[in-house]
Image (cartoon, rainbow over all chains, first blue to last red; front, side):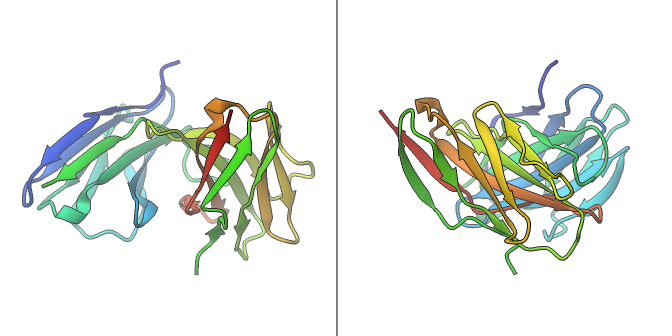
Length: 115
Length: 114
């Protein structure tokens, strides 16, 4: 079974631009979560989607948004990019919504560099 | 308040020896799950092992075992017979029982020496 895939793997943008990252979950998984990883802040939760509905949202500004499609694929968008948005963006999928024992499986990540 | 603490920023271990990576957590929820992930330099987070708060026995997965001490709120990862390929960042994570998101610790960088 194929794992979580993320596209693109690497991205370079300039300040003020916007970016869209894509995530395809493991087949059969309906929950997708997004994380931002930086050396200074570590792994921070962005949002979680299940059945096209946002179930949880982390403490990020409104410039960060996401959505999930009927095939469970998810996209996240960052508008008006700032230098501090440079990070590794990780997507994770799980079978169901946020449950205590629901293991998340991660994709390879998208490395975003904002110049 | 930080919910997951990993006090060892970096650790070294000799190949073929066992190593313990520490993780303590903070929650008032009686229902929670604890997870360990490995992140090689490539960036992908690899799931290693899971322990539920109500599980009576410590979880094991191959060379990985979780030393779960509920009263102390610790969930240490034990890697037996370390291999060079075990060199990576290791993250402890928790999910509480109220439909909350994953919370990750700061990670421990493990280096396995030949």
